[in-house]
Length: 272
Image (cartoon, rainbow, N blue to C red; front, side, top):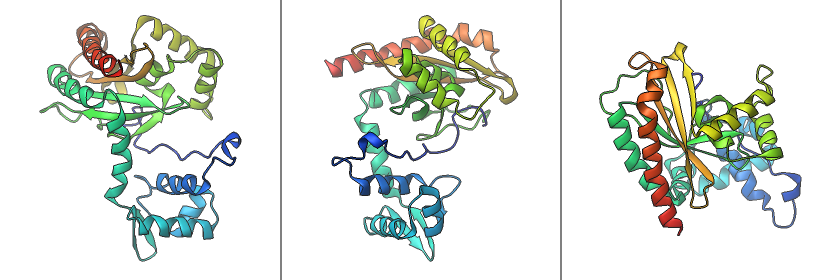
């Protein structure tokens, strides 16, 4: 599905110059860049491909690949390297550290069955320009009307309703910078228009997007920590062939907000 969170891993990020000091471990950064270079579009890569994709010279890329192979994060078949399931431990360590993770999954399953819609929990990276799916639930018996965004999938914040919700955690220059990074290279988007949308949706407490060509609409509401800061978003994808967009908001929004409050209460309790 083109307009929902894209089926791509988060692009590997190079460290800002301010971090390139005595406390910055370059070997760790290089290993993470190599791991992040693999994905749906490149599940297997040669040494040359990894070096080109990460910007590392061949000798450095080779050392990193062989180290990761020795640690069993990579396997090698001939000239091709690919990830092993052990890499999942890195992702699950993050997921298990989220304060809302176990609670959100239970609430999401109930919400998905009740609304007969795909339900997601989406969070963001430190720059807020991309969002990442951390929980994804499809109700039993729902026809395949969209490609289900899987855990770990990412996309630009400006392009999806939960991204607009998460941008609502920012103000001033932080918001401006996040929007500019999110729409970088996309001249059809306006920073001022997106800023107005973020502020509007933050004030109303939810965000909405309709994609008729792909037969779905999307409703997103924030999840907050004990201090009231937005830390994630619940997003519900509903087929337009079953419920029209305006009716979906009227029917589903109160229940989605209720689910968010259930998660928020437990998060606040855990953080107390």
